[in-house]
Length: 106
Image (cartoon, rainbow, N blue to C red; front, side, top):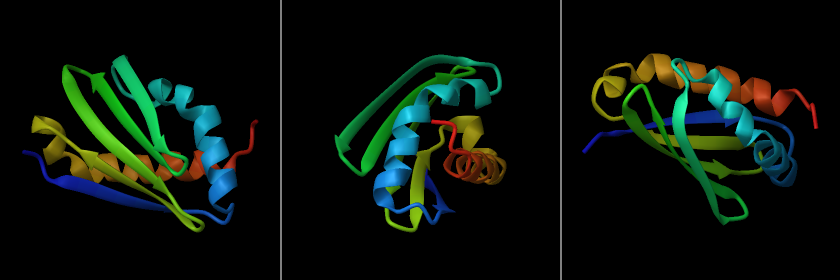
């Protein structure tokens, strides 16, 4: 079983606004994945937690986003070769996550 990779994305939006921005922009995720996303499923088991399952480049990735007042914690299970690139993937998630939360396009 892959080890979890955790990324904290700080913000100053408050929990409700951060959740609103994530909800309204989760569909934009596909354009940030190299090779395209073959399948993506999201669910909100609680108002401040989103789960995500996606398949890209033949790999299946699971993630949980926990939204708090001052940060969003993304916990990913990176299978196979993706696990060996966890540092690069974590940096990209941090950068794209900060941009998503900062840019209020909605």
